[in-house]
Image (cartoon, rainbow, N blue to C red; front, side, top):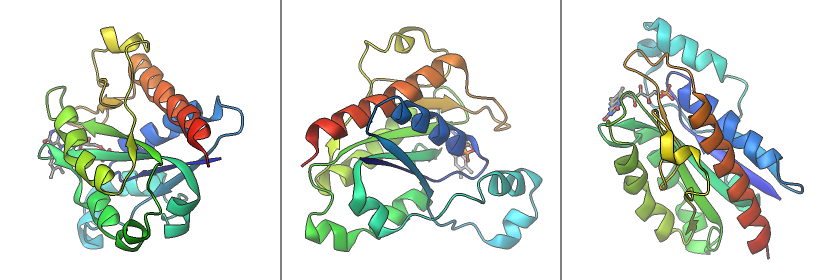
Length: 202
Ligand SMILES: Cc1cc2nc3c(=O)[nH]c(=O)nc-3n(C[C@H](O)[C@H](O)[C@H](O)COP(=O)(O)O)c2cc1C
């Protein structure tokens, strides 16, 4: 069973989170992670004028763009986004808005799905961002998956991560690396999504 990990990332933090979710998926026999990015909406000339954006773009340039087939084939889906003013990024939302034909077909109904998020600051809107995307997943008929407190790192994370989904605090310079608790929560989430996907497989 394929677990689609579809994300948007400007500076690379959400991309690095996607790699950790994939590690969690790999822990489950029979589950294969498929990492895909969504189209960029920031004009090329702006990216070219910023060293941090160029670096973020370049580290993920080998990641293929997601296709409708990726969504169709997935037994479970993880959505990754940086926070933008407390809500989901326009880039990831734009991709979800392009799923109208799959919505009409009911192609995503019954698939487990969850959301992981990167913010600059601890209180910059991780939970808000997850909840801002949740209605779209429910409209598409997906079954929302969070992170239960049996994942003990939720009790003492000083970075990101909550019962609503994994999180990462990237810092105002976007350079803070994923810490051990954030990593554990990301992997537990990938593992859980894969296990639930396998249980629900038709
Ligand atoms: C337009 C814009 C709005 C942002 N809004 C927030 C915000 O509301 N809260 C926050 O903590 N960080 C905010 N940030 C910072 C991003 O969340 C941060 O750069 C991101 O998590 C880094 O992820 P990435 O490396 O995957 O792009 C914002 C950044 C931009 C460019």
